[in-house]
Amino acid sequence: MGSDWNLQRIARVVLIIGAVVVGVWMLRRFLPALAWAGVLAVATWPLRERLARGLGRSALASLLTLAVALVLVVPLIVLGVELARESVVIVQLVREMREHGLGAPDWVAQLPLVGPYVATWWQANLADPEAAREFFGRAEASGLIGWTRTLGLELVNRLTVLVFTLLALFFLYRDGPDVIAQTHAISSHLLGPPGRHLGRDVVGTVRGTVNGLVLVGLAEGVLLGLAYALTGVGHPVLLGLATGVLATVPFGAPLVFVVCSLVLLAQSHVTSAIALLIFGSLVVFIADHFVRPILIGSSTRLPFLWVLLGIFGGLETFGLVGLFLGPAVMSALIAMWREAADLTES
Image (cartoon, rainbow, N blue to C red):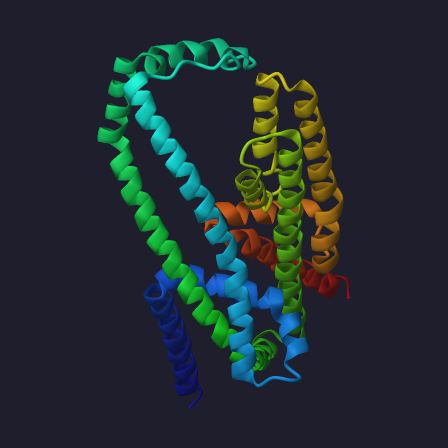
């Protein structure tokens, strides 16, 4: 009798593991969308709780999903419009260069370290009309068509992920309380009381990481976008958006404002270049050393070193969504470590 019960238990475990493996393999292409939906749901759940008192589940889910869609899509539309405007200018510039060539501006040769080499290359490949036609002919024949196709496929894939993310987010908003109750019941049954604390730590980590990375990154983009406009950098809106996106990764914003400072310096705008460099460095220093540790560390009880390791490790392993999953994994590991240490001491 006991052996039959053990065999049934083993068979049940094998069946569960097999079903999970098959399900994950079957849904592997949709896992990024599900992960993004989970991150967005966790980050915005307090808002959902506040609005739940006066709205039905379906109406609430529809309203919140629409709001998240607008927040995600409107910046993409702005970015697309700016890129379309820039592409028209670039196409016109390429046509003129193929017809008449383009001489190197004076400031190119004044670039620190690489100026003479860039000016020589520019003179050999772009200044002479024949060389310019040959150069752009090779570019069009080799990489431009393939790059355009790759960009189109990536755009379709990203739109597909966005659609399924919003669809999954709607059902999480609608059925989230039931999912949370079921998760608590299962974790308590399998892990005991530590399971509830572990889930709370993971949720707090995701929410704190969203606040610390996305909101702070957007604030950096806005502040530096204003700085670009005031110092005379071209296309401040596009550069501000790029800075905001890169600023979601710690120490990513300098990739933009340092290049802008070098361009201003090469154009002999020394005061503007120094002012932009100092202001950008100050904004990034305050954000990365004070604001982010407070927002992320206070909700996760993680030292900021482990937060950084989780961010970069998650980014390398899972892609962009790993920015939020990585710290959550680190939080779970640290929570289990502390639980084991408490059990050992007691």
